[in-house]
Structures are given as C-alpha cells and as structure tokens.
Amino acid sequence: MEKLDVIVIEDNKNMKESILQLLNGAELKTEAVSNYEDFKNLLKSNCAGVYLFDCHFPIIPDGNAEFNVKIAIEKVRKAHQNPKIILYSSTNGLKLYADIFKVDYMSKDEKALELLNKIKSLLKEP
Image 1 (cartoon, rainbow, N blue to C red):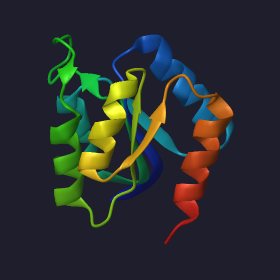
Image 2: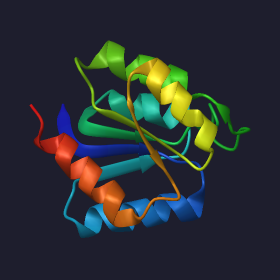
Image 3: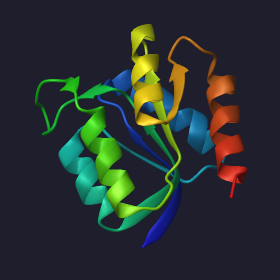
Image 4: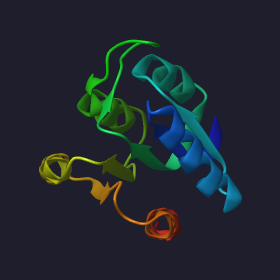
C-alpha cells in the first residue's frame, strides 16, 4: 500500500487544481479525486497522513454533488486507524459536522498558507 501525504476529495475543478498546486508545490505527495467512487478505488492501494474532504461531492463521476462526506469519513475510519481528517468547506455552518464527526475543520475562506500549515502540523503528529 502506498502512503501519500494527502488524499483530497474536491469536486470543484478549479478548487481541486488550486489545492493540488499548493500541496505539490510544498512537495507533499498528494492525490485528488472528485467523487466517492474514485475515492474508494484510490483507497484500495493508498492511504494518507491527512485526508482533506470537501463536504459536498458526487457519489459517481458526473453525479450530483450532495452531502456525502459522512460516508467518506466512515470509509477511511474502517480502512485506517486514527486517520487525520479535515473538512474543508465554504459553508460556515458545516463546522458543526466537524465537531459531530470529531475531525478538524477549515473554511475555504481561510488563506492557502493556513491550510498548508494545518496539514503539515497534522502530518508531524504521531
């Protein structure tokens, strides 16, 4: 199984490209997908130090974006012990879900450097 630094689920193409540029520019080994089906396939042969999830994404390619983050969190927790997960959303009310799911939360309104620093700090944790 290949160990990546970060696995991202983000269905917005421009946001996904920006995140990949940020993380790859920081020399973090990163893979990004835009739907749950691709995420499940990625997990078959990969794990990550940090999982960065948008809260709304489709189950299948070209499907409708819906609140599917709960199933992604459950999938990671079944596959890997104590995963480090960040919910990354532009909807401020979704911080409540991060508290419920006991994961970290960052707003897409925060600066890219803050996101990068958060990911790096989680990667340093045991």
